[in-house]
Length: 217
Image (cartoon, rainbow, N blue to C red; front, side, top):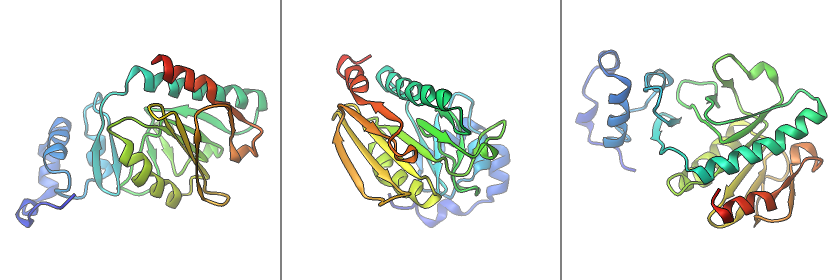
């Protein structure tokens, strides 16, 4: 997306930040997405009910997730959580909405759909600091480009060890083992799939997720 003309930047950003409400920031990002580089301070001024992500200073306002999306997220989380409870290790599973300050800088804040954190020191009372070990995004029509392109590169660079993308419409699973070969692998959403950070000891029941996608709930 091309940046706006230079005259859009001829103002004092500090004064503007003080005067704008969180809702103004949402409206501005929709009207002028590349107007300037947004920060976590801007992000934190968004209204509580606003859903957004910040990637390298670019603010992405997100639609509310569908019922189907949330069902798949919650069932995947439950499968992972059940395994972790039985294993009784240090790793913990979580699901969006949860802020992750992926790069530990002032320009990126993401909300992965499902994540696993094995270093509990990354968990603060407010958010996760740094890259999770495992991330899964469930694709929505409005988020496909971001999930397949922007987030893949962001997660790779930030140090996420494994990244999954579930596409309920296409019934596909795309995986990246960044801690291993890093090669993109795609398969149908059926059977079972092993989570590499657990050396395939954790097997996700894809048939359950595909059945949800088929029913729509």
